[in-house]
Image (cartoon, rainbow over all chains, first blue to last red; front, top):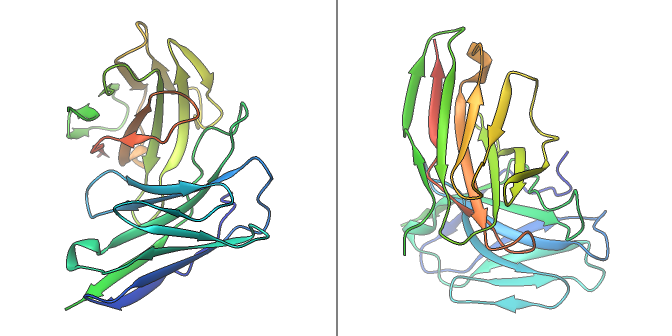
Length: 112
Length: 113
């Protein structure tokens, strides 16, 4: 079973920030939080990952709470091309935990 | 550079037939993963290779499913005696090492009639 829970769907106005939440209350100390997105009929695309510090790259920012039990993916200026299913995944670095266990994700719709 | 490629992109077969799905990982990537995705669901892990060996095959649903990676590069997922429930998109991913993020291919859509 997935170790994460996400809202099934969200809408966001084009040009606004999209904030996608994820709960991972059973995360272990050596487990990372990964975010992927999947645009219709394509394979999942890597966005960002983090352990406990906030992370930012050219695509998004990842905010992880201090207790690490939840996180938020932020797309700072959403565009129509950001419409996709977003998956939050918890993944370890010890044998047996390298695989991704996907949940059902959040379907983000960016509205014009 | 070239990403992960999968062939065929679509495969239609009849119940009971044997199918092979191919994955070409990114050059130099030592880790390779197979997942399958049913409609409306997130991808489900099947098997993970580190080099030539299957390091984790805990996701293979039954003994009709088998995968190989004989030279540590290309991998083939083999499904015997296909069933209608095997219909799904089969995704392959590779990564430079087991601790790195995974890069996914476009998938093979398998339809079992």
